[in-house]
Amino acid sequence: MANLSADNNTDEDADDWDDDGLDYSEEIKKLPLAVRYGGIFCTNFEMVTEGDFSWDCIPALQIYEVVCNLRYIKPNVSDLHDLGVSQEQLVRGIEIFKAIKASAEPWARSLAQEFESIDDNDDDAESGLSLNDGVDCFVSDVADEEDDLGHIRKTDPILFGEICLETSRVLAAR
Image (cartoon, rainbow, N blue to C red; front, side, top):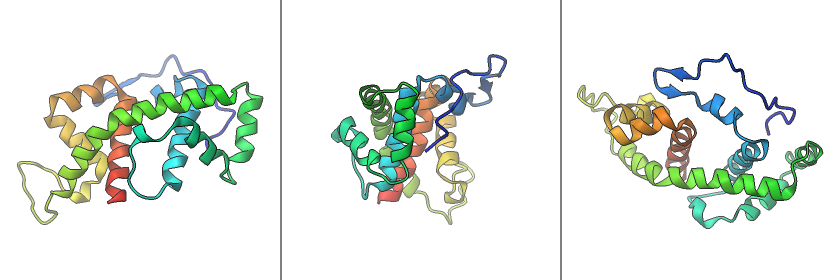
């Protein structure tokens, strides 16, 4: 779990724009503490959950309970409470982050299917895509070609980051 004494402020002078749009890490730092840790709880839930699942089918309270029972998380939960984050706020943060992941899921399933269809021996100069590039690079390449995904990359870095992460999760579960 991330450092619980994370600074809630962001660097006002930081340049949020790069060639691909807004920066995922900087945008995550701007989220309320309960939502940021909702994302961390979702990530830990993914790590201990076997197989493929849909975020729409998992209640936020179940994610909270599963993750709170992890030996390495228990001490951090009381630290969160000491910082003023209640169980209810954290469950709501999980719900918010879970909704982002659920929005990323249809993209991820489609991209995973496309990723799997790439013939790694095919050096198709036209597509420029290869399994050697990795999932994040692949998703970015697709975003260069598809306006909708490209728009998400430039305007909603959290959703775009979750599309990349969910694509990896979907591929790992296959």
